[in-house]
Length: 112
Length: 114
Image (cartoon, rainbow over all chains, first blue to last red; front, side, top):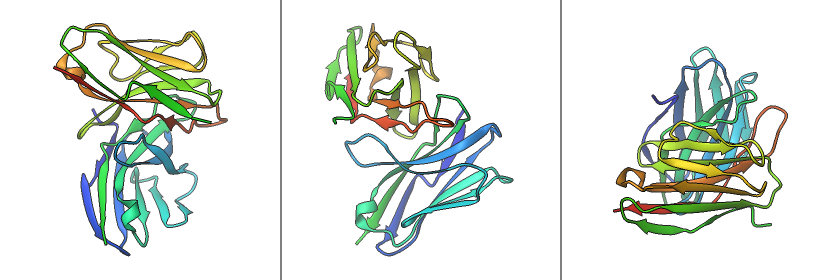
């Protein structure tokens, strides 16, 4: 079964708008939550990551919000740009473990 | 510094044929991984290695074998390809971080089994 559930499957946002992608998990042993960005024909690349000791992490236009009690985390892309059009994957792993459990991905399209 | 490279980029196999995918990294990473990516499924871990000479099973290991004879290389083998193995395969590597392991991905190999 999917360890990390991701929604929506696809998202269309106008340039300048806010893109929001949500993920949920059940395993309370997870303690690292990265987001990966993938452009067509390329491998995923780490975008931003958070640990559960903070509720928010911001890097430029990208913010992760983390709700430990609800076991949910989300990626917010502010002032979305056409260059942000890509597939975004959330993931989770346990401390000291090698495995990253990925969500199913969200295809973001930012319309000029 | 090439990062993670994969060979080949594309391949078409007939059912029952075998092949090997090669992954190489020049970052001196200890850990290497093979994933497959299928529509609506995300990335799923096939096998991984925590160092030269070691391998371990991931989520979906059946039908695949791996070897890590050199630290910089990780090979993924399909002994008897099946249509269900049609997918995009990604290799990744990571260093040994204190808590977690940022994974660096290669560009992928698109495999079609007919």
